[in-house]
Length: 468
Image (cartoon, rainbow, N blue to C red; front, top):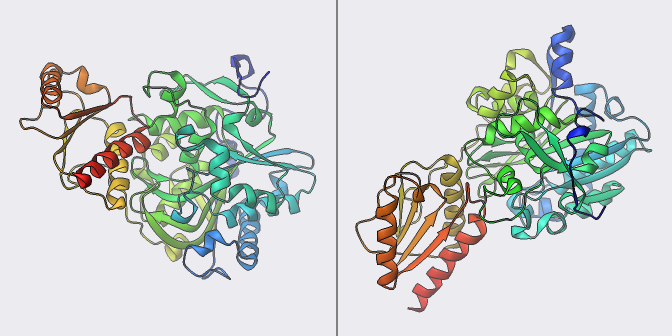
């Protein structure tokens, strides 16, 4: 079948390495004791200078030091990489590539860490066949996974480490897997190459998240599903499963029911705080975390970030639905103690109100899907230094129509069209158009395309204002 083809695969569910719950949780419930999570810390990384060159130049002494940390993390958590991977097995490392061109803004996995992880696995099990890949966070809106990995230096890092193959997941054969007891997803469109792998390794980045509170091992698993750039987001099945809406946390838990990783690593050499996952700032942590349990490793990571795991819905749900363990009292931290490496992260703010001077937000019944996408887009526009005035943004169910004229009116999402105030908003929009004002609609539930398309709307409008 041709590359990228879709295969109905309900009959494949339950075959291969996939299980419906964390194997480590089952071990603990069977009397094995607490869930082990490794926390490996260094006071400094040799060769690191504390600037962008750390992730752009890949100094050998830095990679060597991080590789030693990864070896230690494997050893502390499971007794070594050979306890996870056996000779001749196919290994897929799902690394967080995020979006194209973000390595120096610290949105993706550190190339040094990726190189180190691949190297450690190949050294431990030389006959293993190691693949590295991801589905880019915004699909093809910014070029897709191949471009993302190449621009962020992750392709080069994978091959330097000894990977046998770099796999842009969105170019490969797709299958559909049923999700047992799915609450946000009844089925997941994923990739044959992941099902065929003997071992799935989750290589995540420690970051705050504008909608998910944190993004580490569990949130990184969003990249195992396929979604198109079909418009509007939320109606085509594959764009709906890729979008981030109010069901984001449940979606991550549902994915782990059907396609759990066998081992999770968190790259916290350099974290991101503030307006993550892409608009935050660098935070040096010099940490590697590891566990068989993605919920447990995230819980420890959250605690290190100064966030109680119970504040993160996907961790609460993960424990409630027996995907993993989020209760720190049921976790054995091996290596550095949480209290010795804890460094509170500045949290992301997800509401869009009062962010950009000259832009008024009209929102009532909007969910965090639209609100967080709008906020992330506005953060990016604000960082550009461009300015606007007389701009209105309307979103959400039962939102009031403006009572003044605006030169640009943006309508975001779909709820505004269906609520009690829809007729009044449509009358207002017709009036603005009749007056020669610019009106732009960004549809979807939730419209993930805002990051590319609303950014362009605002930038084009700002440029016209400057010329005017």
